[in-house]
Length: 148
Image (tube, rainbow, N blue to C red):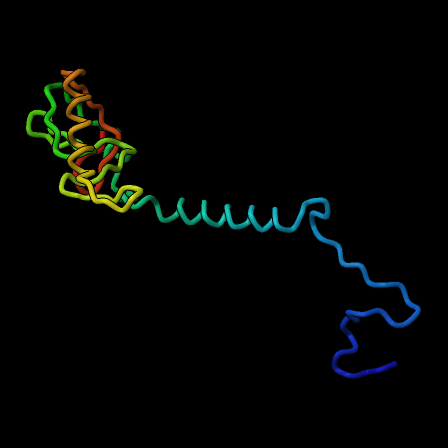
C-alpha cells in the first residue's frame, strides 16, 4: 500500500479491474442547466429583495411604520410629467410607473429622435381630462414625493 500524503483521498480513476467510482448528485433526475438557471434566478431575487428597487428607499415608509396614512387627495390634476401629477399644490407620483421625463427624447426603431417625454405627458393629460376629478390614495414615500 502506498502511504504518501495523498493516500487518504479517493482515486478519481478506478484501478484496473476495479469497479468505477460513481459520484451521485443531489437531484439526479434534474438536468444540470436547469439547476444552474434556478440558482441564478434565486440569487437575482435575493439581490433584488435585499437591495430594494431603485426608485424607493427601504426603511423610509413612514405610513407603514407609524400606522398612520395621509388622507386621500381629491381634485383636478395638472400633469407635471408622464408619472407625476399635482393636485391642490401637492405633487403625486404614480406607484409602479416609470415614464420618461418631460424634456427627454427617445430613439425609435429607425434611430430617429422624438420627444417621448412630452408625448407621455400629453397622453396622461388626455387620460386625466376624461376622468376628472382624480382621487389618489397613499401607498408609500419615495425620494421625490409621496407615491400614490
